[in-house]
Length: 260
Length: 234
Ligand SMILES: Nc1ncnc2c1ncn2[C@@H]1O[C@H](COP(=O)(O)OP(=O)(O)OP(=O)(O)O)[C@@H](O)[C@H]1O
Ligand SMILES: [Mg+2]
Image 1: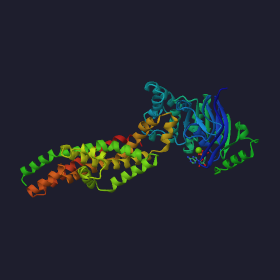
Image 2 (image 1 turned 60 degrees about the vertical axis):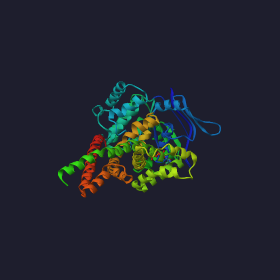
Image 3 (image 1 turned 90 degrees about the vertical axis):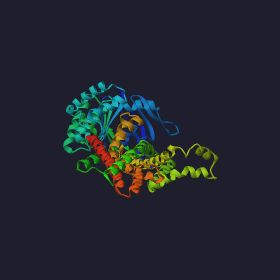
Image 4 (image 1 turned 30 degrees about the vertical axis):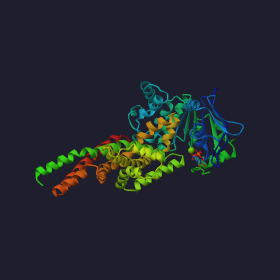
């Protein structure tokens, strides 16, 4: 099995605040990994470091075998040359919690703009791909709508299509349903399930425990910037889970998310 | 005033509509792009540049435009006469011909452009800063370059947001052109004043007022049209 993503001893500090400590895990082709954990545990920061939205403070990350950054013997983080970083970045798609669609573009243009401007595809080809993706998302009738005319669930499906349009090797989701009304989360989870069935490699930060248990091959439980436990869903959601994981899930299930 | 006299005044003022529109048009032409640059400089992370830009904006917005026009007009002749000038500056100033016909227009234009650029800069900065961080992050995650992000994602959204405030500035500008009469730049207001004295009548002033009113109204209509055009989202 090909390793799509390799994270070794990743650390991240914001000034004095140590947000990620010694994070290591790897993702193989076709894996679906759910990342769970209390608020502030560093889940978003982890995705953002791998997506180059934050600079890492230490460790090493390889995407599809290519080194994105590593740490030299003096503890200095060395990033790959800009051209490589651009290429690596396109291998990972990111879906945001609050969609971040471009409001001045139509649905279709939101999806085609990056393939046209970044991958230099022809507009016809990009449009064809986009229509295919919209169909998959059940939004074929919305291609000329603007994001503000769509429901939250529809916007999130457009943003998934937008990320997919660059044919990434891995898709990251940062709490894709947290900004949605509860009755709209189902349509997003359905889309992600479909992607999983299609064999898409995904890392999903989520508070939907049912969903994580269902769809994930592996679950990572994070707390205070470290991976407390990693394993199959049956293990983490089962009786053999570590005390910390059990505590978190128990508090989570009792209704309120533990605020650290 | 008789009807013929009034018509005569209207014709004179119509002739001086051009100098008024020249100031208006060239001020816009230069102050909008300059304002954009000043806005970006003010957001510069290099502190001294940021401070200098802030000082410039503070002075331009904190002092009257009329005073700035007077300063611009007298600065060159005064500095030319001053003994304490570095010779390099003297040489530079020597190149300026204050007798030339264009000198008056150019000094007025410099004052207007510098002043309006400061106002536009603040509007543009507000517009740029109002764009959520998520737009930059989404663009970065999709692989857009910094340049593409600014011109394709950020700027179009900024334009929509700054149109209402900018339209106020533009309408103010058309009226502010009358300030140029303080250095005897021949435009509508100055000519209307002369005609007022000729005829010992207020009518020429009202006619001038009507000119500005029509210009401002036309601009209002144009801007509400633009705002409607940009109303296709959010
Ligand atoms: N830009 C930043 N500057 C300083 N501190 C930050 C920054 N971004 C995140 N943090 C801090 O890093 C820690 C981890 O934040 P992060 O957003 O990764 O948590 P999270 O697990 O995604 O939480 P949530 O479930 O609420 O989304 C928090 O304590 C947060 O305050
Ligand atoms: Mg988060």
